[in-house]
Length: 271
Ligand SMILES: NC(=O)c1ccc[n+]([C@@H]2O[C@H](COP(=O)([O-])OP(=O)(O)OC[C@H]3O[C@@H](n4cnc5c(N)ncnc54)[C@H](O)[C@@H]3O)[C@@H](O)[C@H]2O)c1
Image: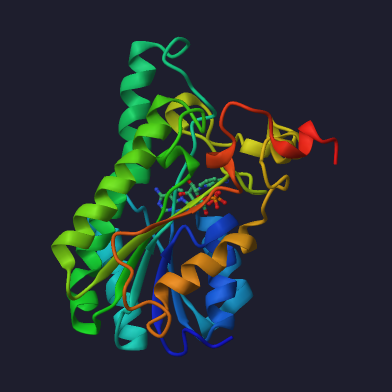
């Protein structure tokens, strides 16, 4: 504990799921936290829970000005910014090209790519001057859909693959001052919501799916809690533990990539 003592970290989408688990873990590690969050109710819950301990900014990651407000409020309160974590995201509930209308495809592409990809670049740009000063880092939350098919429909998959390119390009452009890395979690025990343009804004991943079935599909045979993912972020953000890694994606996929064409081993052997 204490790997991030006095490091100032801005987390987007920190009001629930993985973002909230990161808030908790980073506080435990000694970090000073701010959150950019779109949902007014999650903003209120965060403020009630943490009071003055963290900075909470209501805003939308697809708006550059909202990202800038979050950076400015962070620096106003804590005096600097060491790490920007682009984490806010939405899913598409496997919306596929066969069943979406052309109009839905058009609108959903703009919405999902905006939140899941464009916002990474806007957030990085807003944080840039401060991260250059602090020689800090950027961490992007991707997904198994950044590497494989069938983690969503074509739009979600494209949005997360785009994140790999953004991470690599920013790592190149911002070296040697700022390290840029990513974490690609597998499915988690989190009820991530879908796209408003597809009428899915209140529909969670776990509302429609059985967590035990998802777990059985993982070679490591468990559905991770968001807390299980936070160690990878601590490693990447920590100055003591990470001088060399930039342009790196930590593939936290519970073994999906080694599944190949065979069934998960646990099912073969009836553990
Ligand atoms: N849940 C999973 O199984 C899973 C798997 C792999 C990757 N991920 C990724 O993890 C990240 C976090 O998602 P989660 O699973 O914790 O779900 P979540 O819904 O709990 O968290 C996403 C957060 O982002 C916020 N948000 C959404 N759009 C926003 C916007 N435009 N501006 C500001 N905030 C916004 C939401 O209000 C929410 O608090 C996402 O990038 C997601 O793609 C999730």
